[in-house]
Image (cartoon, rainbow over all chains, first blue to last red; front, side, top):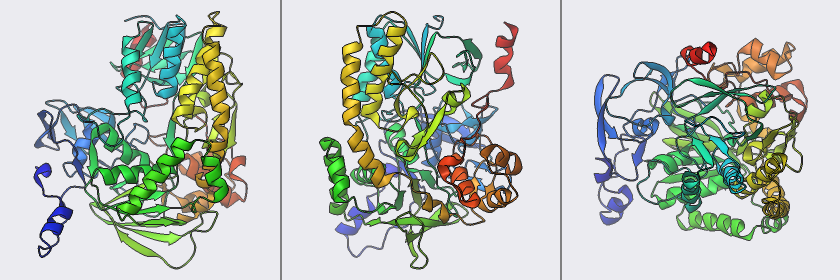
Length: 116
Length: 461
């Protein structure tokens, strides 16, 4: 997947005439592409994510940038502190509301609903 | 499960872990509560990495192994303290979601630090993270931005993270540092800890070598974006108080922004317990007042590590030992730890010169909060703007408590953990007083959201 993408710098160095690479579709990538993938559902979409990885990080590498909407302005908001303090990464997980996804490891069969 | 021990340590970061291990050495049973799934705190976080990469620290693995091997330590991960009462008794949310009561004779709070957030227009957009948050994605989840990334703020983490990103081949567009280049006297003070100074200079050289531009005396003054999040940041020069100067804005394209101005002690436990607190920007802000034995003004409640004053991981490891020795003495198991505690106290003293130089260079300066305009969201949970806060102060709400009632700033899910420092400085600015004169915000139980059914068993007891 993402791991198979050529390093944009390398590509440009080796093929100076090649066009500049398009912006990558996700804001984040995993450093280690290994690890067991398990199926789960995010907003009704079937995904395979690395087991045990913090859910927030796994979602970020799959192009989910906003996790919920703010209460008054209804603006999209995403994770900020990644240590359980800010509660900006909350989602509904297996029916439980306001779960901090940065502290929730990915598990098989999870049903995640983002409020975005 | 074992009943809770006579001594409870809250937080299994370097301070709490060092304390628990020292107490175990003195043959004292200890219950080590931690809200993380693994011991080591944020600084030694590793979970999710399958390889040793940037940010990996062998000391974390060693701490975890020693805790696991110690029969005297009852380590309980995924346990959150939701309340502490005047008699030092705790309500703890356990790993099954139930709230249980614990009443230790001795209690050590080692809750660590939280990031200082500085609101700028657009900082609430997806793709903007705390600097520490971005580093935790790297260390704890092996996840890095695809880039381009802008890292902005002040302090050593800026350079450390930029160097770690470079090592992980993350395109860093720029490092924006509000602080000036460290002067001769600052470098002299930093030289009191030669290895840390050398590490810092090493990070700086790696950025130079990697062609990553570093703008000193600059700050991010706005974050542009579209529906998906950040697209660019606006950068301006700042004065020596870190107040953005008019004119001369430049734009830097970015898909991810790390924004961090250091960390502050997490004082919610010591505040809720009723301990006295002081204010010192060099320690990160509000801190619990302590004796030389690290006891707070609440008898039997000790505090160690960055949660009592941000002085770094080496200091936290030493404070854990000092607090453990004091607790052992109190429980008539003194003597065994005293020489180690004396050595730790000596190292702690010698570190002071370094920390003062570090604070002098990079500790938060109030001018940076001028980057927020009237429309800037300050409290992310409740969408309260800087303009609303200034208006409430003008109407006479001049302390965080009343201001919270008037505006809802700090009333949301995070209970003001993110916006506390910003609210304090905006209040001080609007009221024309010193930030240190603003009282710390009030703290109420439950400290974290707990479903009501978590309390049912405790209520039945």
